[in-house]
Length: 164
Image 1: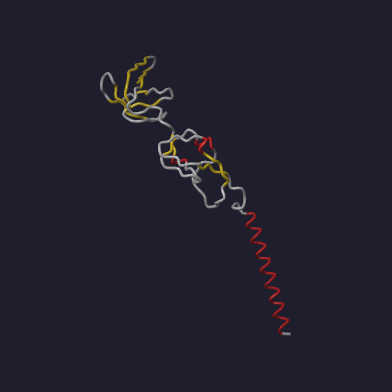
Image 2: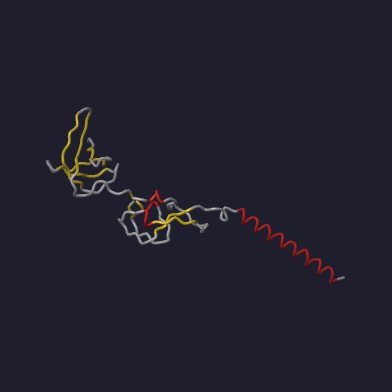
């Protein structure tokens, strides 16, 4: 009789263990980690700081690490034409925060300065004292007067001077 009860207890424990394992498997299959986690863009070669990212040097891979978080690029269009601020290694995700828009105005190049009030527009030649992308406020030296002024880089490559 003692043997029989021990055998029944072992059978009960075995059933409980199997049911627990089945519930764990079901929970794992239903979790988001097991679901499609999306895609990520990775370089196929080393891309150095200051280099423009070309689509030929990129690959799109499936995310398999459930702990991967952050602002990494998920599509090739998101990073094509951008400039990297840090070295990008092959097979590693590309953080969007490490990219910038290419400079439209480069330091030392010649630019057109414009200043407008109402219908009146004044223009002059200038030399940027810093690099700038569209919408950046940069310092520019007026070539005629030698004065340094601040202005906003416009989409056409001109710098619109701000009124003081």
